[in-house]
Image 1: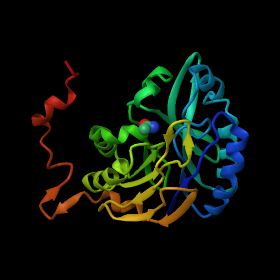
Image 2: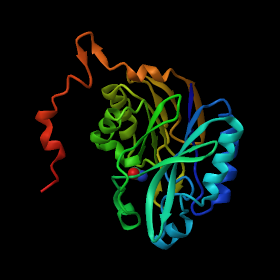
Image 3: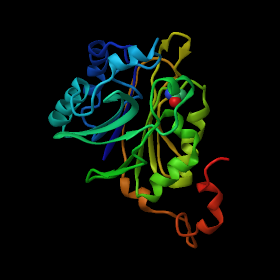
Image 4: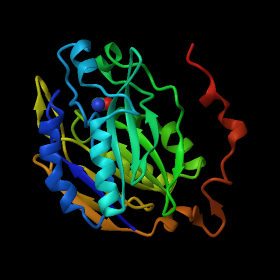
Length: 266
Ligand code: ACM
């Protein structure tokens, strides 16, 4: 199986310009079975107002952005995970969508909103789903979700073999150091597709990466400029949870001792 990230700069509130920028990179990933794109890829990130964010959002079932990606999946027989500014009635979600040749296959809505996102988006209400696409089981996270170890573990417990992390990271080097550790601690593949460029006072940190279940970095992008990478993996490696012949990452856990994890904050 070949998995890929595309690191680029979506155009703020200009879908056609974004698609123009994206197309050559989709072609560069022609042999990929799974391509991961950055957060809020259909809209950009740093909106001047909620109104601008709403105007750039699209419904999951009626999206030109998703239609274009479905067509790419059909032509190349692949899947795409992308960040997606989703409008559902009057509510906006910072979502990720899983797209295949026959249309969208599922979505995730960002659980942990970062800073001013809280003025625009509702927190996710679809949990942490895992989707079986035949070649692998796929989970999705969006950007700041990375700092909550519970997200990685829940996806792992649900059987995710590849965690697709759509990002617009702004804290330099932090997630990029944490992602290999989470891959190692959960024995999963991770693809972090981060964006580059600047919007207003925000500069995005690039350095997208693909990591294997031992935490080895298989591909890494520069901090600046667009970049795409495709790597071949065996997703079955993520099923081997034996850390030593006597230690299984999942069954050696002591969940009865972890009750504090599931208590709501005071
Ligand atoms: C972020 O969650 N976009 C930093």
